Structure formats: C-alpha cells, structure tokens
Image (tube, rainbow, N blue to C red; front, side, top):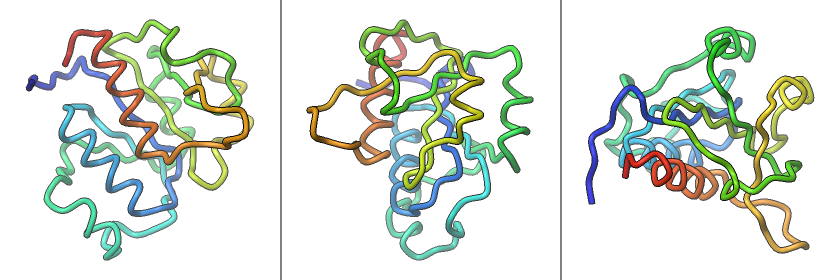
Length: 157
C-alpha cells in the first residue's frame, strides 16, 4: 500500500542524535512512510560520516529534514503545536493515545534521552510497553513502531 505525504502528516523529531546508523535508519523510515524529520542539534556525528552514508543510501532528501540549531529553536517553532515525547519514563502506552495528523513525535538521544526541562515542558509523554527487565528498544525501531501507529490512526497509510 502506498500513500502520498502531505504537510499535514506527522513529524518525527530527534533530540541531539548521537549514533549515525540509527539516524540514517530513521531518515529511511521517514522517507518511505512520508513523514517529515526534524533534527535538534548538535548531533554526535557528521552527516558525511561513512557509517551514516552507508545506511542512509539515497534516501536523504534535505527538503524532508528540518534542522534546529538548539532545543529552544525547536520549542519556539512549536508554540502552538502538540509535541509528544516518547520516553521509557511515561506511564501511557502509545496504543492508548489518539494521534493527530499535525503531531510532532519527539525521540530522545540514544545515550541519554532528553533533559528534564523537556520532560517538564511536554504534556503528552508516551511509551512503548516492554517486558519488565528490558531497558529500551533501538530508536530506529521505536520510530517505526510509533510512526506506523500514528499513520494508521490518522488514515495516512
């Protein structure tokens, strides 16, 4: 099944990503599923990193990626928009949440998540339920799982 992406589709935001292969995999997922990607800098790698290029292949269209120089720039651009934070510290499952086409779904840095400031500022915090003794999924897998649910709920896929 295919679909056309629109400006009203969900956006995936990555907070200061630090693993090039994961970010490249997220770029491919967003490209294939028609989601815009937003990256909050600084990144822990350069986009000309060979590990990044190997995974991203020809899926990187800079027109589909928006870079923010800081977390404050990101937040200022989202003043009247809903941001959903995906975090292992949430109590609500992503499957119990009603997504909207205009949502921005934020994922934290692989090594450290997001700072406490963002946890306090963002009202909607969700998790992907896992077995009790497991810490977290790979961020690329998490993005794919949640983006697919968002697209399904908003009839974009």
